[in-house]
Structure formats: structure tokens, C-alpha cells
Amino acid sequence: MSTTTEAIGSATQRVEFDPITAAGGEGADVNLDMILDVPVTLAMEVGRTRISIRNLLQLNQGSVVELDRSAGEPLDVFVNGTLVAHGEVVVINERFGIRLTDVISPAERVRKLR
Image: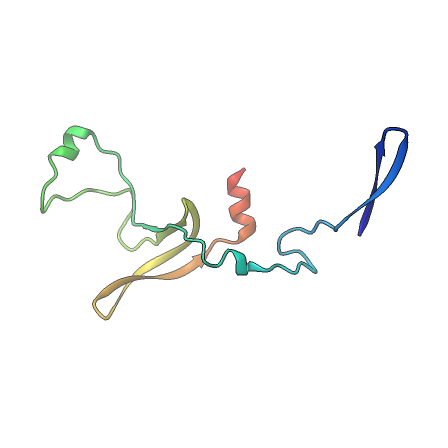
């Protein structure tokens, strides 16, 4: 434990604090049980485009919207709006899914926040 002195009036007392460790640092005993049931939003993005409201209102069944990506490029995987991985579409038992091909490292995600 680290120590700090705190002045109270003219008397001085020693206060003890637990050491501060960085998340995932050496010796960090992290208990994730408290957050395992917290819901998050997972979204897969095929691509994006900008379209005027006029053109949006003209869309109907069979319309094609051009995206900013080429066919075959990886999808972006977002958790609560933060890019966490890239992947590709797969079909398993007649259902769509995504196979993660590249997971963004925690250090890279923090760097992109700045």
C-alpha cells in the first residue's frame, strides 16, 4: 500500500491507499463478473453512403444503393459505436453471420479515441 500525508488543521495524519494499477497491467487481479451481464450494442457495417432526402424517398423494392466499399472488402464490427474488429459475411444453416478476420487491439482502440 502507498502512503500519503493529509493535513487536518495543525495535526498531520497518515492515510493509506491501495496501489493503482492500469487495466490489464502486471499483477492486475481484475474481476469481470460484475459486468458480464451488461448489454452492449453490436453492429456490423457493410458500408456507408450519403443520400439526399429526395433520393431516399424515391427508394423502393429493387432499388440499389451504392456504398463506399467494394465487394469483398471486410465489414466493420462496432460495439457501442466503437470499431473493434473487421470480418466477412458467412452463411451457416441458412442464417447470416460474421467471421472475425481482424480484431483491433485495445491499445489501438484507445489511440483512436484521442
